[in-house]
Length: 255
Image (cartoon, rainbow, N blue to C red; front, side, top):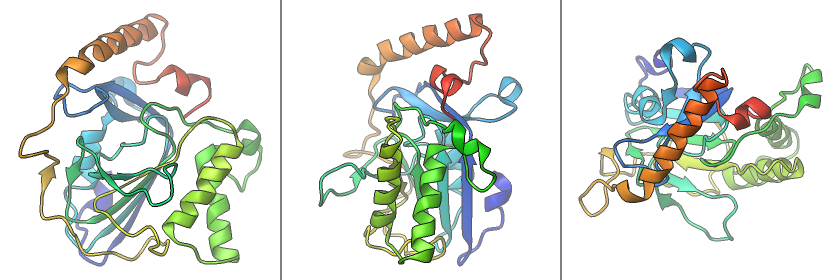
């Protein structure tokens, strides 16, 4: 991933699209409210391990200077906060809902937008029938974005909120129970025109880990049991001969 952001300068527009397996692992710095870090599962996971959200943020987001636009799509399980960006917006909230601060996120200088296929506790699904078509992806999330982009290009130009509504509605039509998520390096008006090129000025006056009232948030007590149960689950998977970086949802149908 490093090659994508190496030597990036203001005015550059970057795109990162990942479609593959995603998972979780216990978070041991107690900055994640649910007790887990979200991960991507690369093809060399058995030798190199999973890519943890903190690491992905460090590689893709932190090196970028102000004036660079990075758009990311994560079509994978447990990808809601997969980039550990500081702000999140839930497309399923009532009209007028605002951005909220993710206490496990990290501020950055660039304009970074990430759309994820599923919430942190959900799996992303595939549609086997679509795999038979050469011109369409088999992931439900990716297929939904193809539909939205076709409407955007052939019928009417849309903003981010309108695009997300189409993607949300198409995913709901599949009845797979996955919730499209939006995160960003900074708050922006959802009526902003959808594209991969415009870049808004950095509105954050902070850098690094999100803090609350001057202290890094910690959630040790409520996560202790979650971590213990997760470790037991992973040990069971390894005993069954499954790769440790692949969860049961990914094995069955998801990415």
